[in-house]
Image (cartoon, rainbow, N blue to C red; front, top):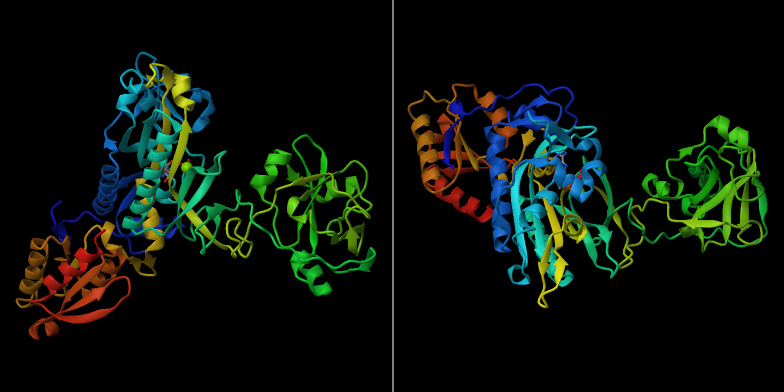
Amino acid sequence: MKSFHKMSKLYAPTLKEDPANAELASHRLMLRAGMIRKGAAGLYSYLPLAWRSLLKIEQIIREEMDAIDAQEMLVPILTDEDLWKQSGRWNAYGPELMRMHDRHEHIYALGPTHEESFTDLVRNELRSYKQLPVTLYQIQDKFRDERRPRFGLMRGREFIMKDGYSFSANQASLQECYDQEKDAYAKICERIGLRALQVVADSGQIGGDTSVEFMALAEAGEAELVYCDDCGWAADVEAATAGVSLQSSGAGACERIHTPQIATIEDLADQLGVPTSATVKALALIDQEGNNVVCFVPGSHELNDCKAEKYFGEYHLMTEDELKEVGLIRGFIGPVNLPQDIEVYADCTLKDIEYWTIGANEVDYHLLHAQQGRDFTINTWVDVISAKAGDACPHCGAALKSARGIEVGQVFQLGTKYSEAMGATFMDVNGREKPLVMGCYGIGVSRALAAVIEQYHDANGICWPVSVAPYEVEVIPLDVHDEVVWPVASRIATELSELGVEVLLDDRKERPGVKFADADLMGMPYQVICGKKAVVNGVVELKHRATGERSEVAFAEVAQMLAQKITEQRA
Ligand code: ATP
Ligand code: MG
């Protein structure tokens, strides 16, 4: 890439105002900085600034893939309907798969991912164990007709993904390929500048993970995570089964207590002077089959939708009318004296809690010391609560923290799912025909760019990490007509570019205020500000965008000094 560009030539139409319908910082700032433009829902053009960053992300990916002997190639975006039928995904993929036909009425799908294409590619030619393992990857536009395309590049209908596939002779070899990819993904995230957690998406039978998601930490993330600072364990709250420490409400005879004006579990805990973890709350719902269900969970925790659906299917919480109809009283539901025809479930964390503080099934009354076995029994124990900060790490017991995350990548052990379905076999050492053992590895290039901005921005704009910044330095002459300022600025820009630094020179005839605002918005890591007074004194001002730190540097030395700083920070 040419390393020195003039702002006057740059196609980056900036916006002064925040665009409507851009809730996320990354979306808003990319629009404002003239990095992306929307074509239609979920379809974006990448303008020059975005494209430079995307190429850098791709380059980092290529280098890390190269280091583990994964080979880059490219398969067609259009994929034959027949392949999807062979794998069984033509129907399974549903409306997200964008389908089309050619002039001969032959049907295709725009690839949302390419397991089928790669399996088809190798199935006739990767025939011997001697050729294995092989890992192939591509960086290409993917198409998914997302139900809700939104947040700019975060969830597009056309987006850039690196997708890779490994082919092995056996599970041990797959494990090796998978571990290498997983390590490479961690390095990629680190080099891009992303603070990311490895979240176990799926555990294998022998305890190891068979799929991990790379979650970039950001408030804007869709995923709710819990993680352990001590041992590095992390999970989606929907998958996590953390250790929940609950308080016992003490032993004793079952006591009926008057609790008027109690609207929430917090009110109850307050009145009794105990933490919510010493109380039990009840959720009344109607499951998919129409059964009336009461499910008890610790007062300190929430019912998790995703987990609950495993037991109750498409359930809904009872409405006021439905509660009345079955004889339940909102806020006062409990396991003692429940009306007929109600199935009783409780979260398994309550199993060891002998005495419960719980509703009395009577208006304005709760029970203290309702004892399991003596006063009530629970038929079915289930795992239905969301883990949360403070719960114990299931690995090491330390207190978990919570965060939100953006899924930027995922590695997955596929096994023989596709090779068996599609007849992709090889000859093993003993001359026996066996299905290839596969892994797949995806990372969202365009989503990663958005995730970087989520992690690196402030009120004025983007604060790029050096590794993926469109340019590393912006040189800002405050008056391009000045016969002292301009030559110094253009000399610094030339020197920097000769030292291999990527420079944007703001050669526009704009007011300083406009230049400063644009420089902060576009967010190059360093700004070299050349004002008349300073230049006359032999210095320029160096501003570090992220910290706002400013210093005066002799203009004869600034290029050398910056080049060194930047080299150190390049990933
Ligand atoms: P999500 O759960 O966010 O829809 P996914 O699990 O379906 O993503 P994968 O099939 O694992 O996604 O794809 C690999 C990577 O591609 C994801 O980790 C993500 O970075 C990226 N990606 C997936 N869908 C989109 C999209 N609609 N827009 C941008 N990037 C995407
Ligand atoms: Mg995924």
